[in-house]
Length: 204
Length: 204
Length: 204
Image 1: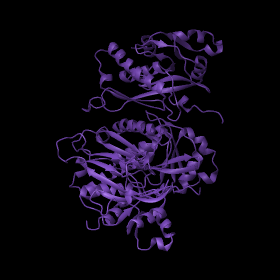
Image 2: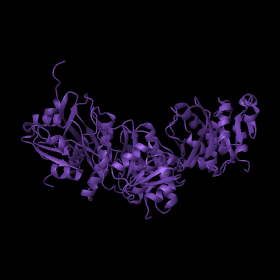
Image 3: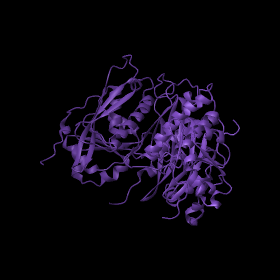
């Protein structure tokens, strides 16, 4: 029924703090997606009710909802480790959304992207320009392999991405790609979220 | 089984504060719908329980419920930015309803309409007369393309709408319409909710 | 399996405060139903937990549950407008039931009836004798058309109803009825709940 349109491909020219570009893989090919996070209400408004909570929308399937929940848990422990003096995530009630709302999305491969969006929000710091990433994350920060590397990279390049973070376990999938797909692309392969953090926020 | 009746088409001659006209698109064609919002109880009644809450009714599907939730989150941050001195949305427990209650409704395309209804309620200010809008909204206020532009515009004109707000991404769909559909209609194309706000409340 | 019995038809000879006669329409024809509301516990018992709450029972479908919720919200704002000095609904924890509990019921057409039952409870004032009503209500008090006018009126007359309130949008359906159905019946057509209130409580 016609060409599918991925409007979200050009939703952001430059992602603000709290927003990170992920990569999705569907039966129709690869596409980029955005993980958006914002603070739902001022940190210190005296209302204790929703302190340290995460609301999730975007027509996500159960696996992706669980992925967001565990990414949130990991982010809180990771952030406390990196910045013991900051209690932002303990106080913040956060809303996470994945446009567009009508497109069903599922799977665990946005794990790293969700963690990075939450860290970016907590630091009020955007990630480096033209960066995208894909990779499941475990509750302790291990980065796990995902599918559709070729389709995801083609989709990323189509929207001007020039730096990409992939699971170490997917290195072989990347190496096997034809050269014209790999050219003009800086690819990083990671085993733990610590490495993602250093690449996404090079100035910290 | 006979002609479907869209009673809501003429539910309001003039929308009060908190009520905004949206546009729906079903297998039977386009129609207008109203997003109604009201305050559930006095702002300062000493009851902290439902402070800053949103109740949703109107036989909405999951995508539309999520759309309302994220529109609510965006509205709170947008409103705080525009009016830092006003804490209405932090205090208010709001009920949002979409008549008629028996008609199932779904989809993300009422996002902009919901935000505008909430802003209108918080400001106690009606939107400009004969205005309707359609457009998905993202958590950061980006306005995304929707379907059924032609059917929606025909439905809007049938009930006397003369100003319409559409996503910039749908400009092409509008331009392609026959002239007799477009005539007597002031169309605005927007990329971010900021622009919707200026058009809906021209005197602020 | 025999003739269906509508026990609710003779449940009340005279409705007390908090109880109002509605009209239902099923595949088996029309019938009357009662909306019953009572206070769950003393108004000022020091327990803040359920202050201003509504519990709903009676085997209601989702549309009817939502209808009760929005009727409750509208009633609170309507009542505050009419009686600014009375805070009954802010304090009361109310239980709403629709006998019989085993019969599934759904649809939005009891909206006006529910509002009237709540108003009657809050005022401790019964509605006028032999009154029944049907009509969806919107969150701002607009009264919307419903189906099954003919069947509902026949059912109402069967149990001695002589005054009926219908949505203005259903006037045509009433006018088209045969004369013997309309005779001995005082019919009122309303656009907004304000008008229902005046008819149901003529002495206030």
